[in-house]
Length: 260
Image (cartoon, rainbow, N blue to C red; front, side, top):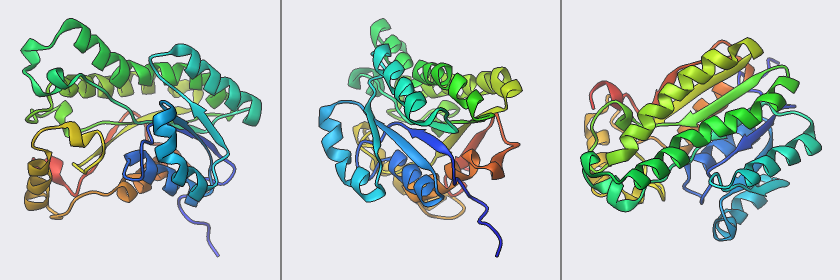
């Protein structure tokens, strides 16, 4: 009997950004756990910890740590715990973004300097920081994979997406540069670009229901993406089946990016 194409048995993976059952990262965690990975997950604060308890219990996750990317010491503590507990890391998933409401919904030209800096720090540079701390543990595993979550607003103007479009464009550029810099260590870096789906983050974007309706109407497959769809692609990318894939932006959006 042949082995499944997505097999993460023996691999240790860090997954960030789980906020509740509808999070993109929840779908990723479920797919990776089903493929056999040992998961480490993080939460932003005590309030979010309460919302993810059902996921922790359902998937039987033992390694759960606080990570607030605006506080470097919490990132350091997470990776110190991973090294102590597992001695290596095979993959890490970055799924976090933030912008002040006025900067998200307002004109880019009116974005405040501090708001721009905060959005870029949390949404983009946090991926660079994650890669920096993950690098030595990925090396100990003989290489591995880093994946971040982006969106079509990086290359097309999406109403009410504002400064986040700039952050995602920078995030995709960071993906390419990190892939080039870390490739010699057999570390692959990719971005996944889902179509619109209703998450807690998306609920803060005005008119998002219209974006979802347009995706169903105009996409070639006439459907919305689900966290499970995103999880399947991500699990593939971090598995050995994706061993020669690096530096790309990979759409999972029912084909909407070709017509959107």
